[in-house]
Image (tube, rainbow, N blue to C red):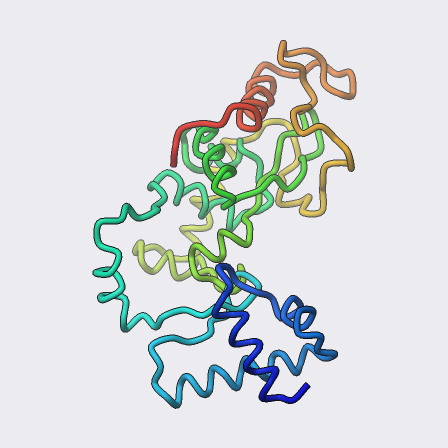
Length: 254
């Protein structure tokens, strides 16, 4: 396939796509042997758009590539869509997403220890909107669910990867704190969330066994025994039941 043909095909695919398309997917569709050829076609298109001062460009986002209008034209695009109800996330959802993004994988009790309020409803909504996903279970009594962000989270916030998130030092500067002060504040809040299980941050590789029923959180709905036969503390039962509710019923809109 000629380079010119490949470039045109890649441009057509990205133009028609309603979500970011990975380089591997583009290679598969075009039948190209080398990923480098696809990347080269994308780079050439970006260069051409820049030289022609086009109102759009190809942006790397959420593990793929997509055509986006340049921010310079956002004012007129908003006018085009005036009257439509924008899809926004609430302050509570933003707080929860920030915690999950920086501390993932993380259990609900740790999230609530940092926020200081019940977060089961917000987690339910974020799961329904595919901004977070279940990352398995933490070991220990009750085996609470762990949460992580998704590619949809990256797309929603215009990030190519999690490494594009602002550093905590930048947050500290905005809040007028020293970086170590912000870190101590977060660690202090996390200590409130102790529920007798190891921190999810120390078990990033922990995943639910294949074929496991996600509604089985180690304690029955009647607050029975843990899977290892040991009695489950009352607080741990409450967290297990809340995890079940998140999976089964959902919660308030974020």
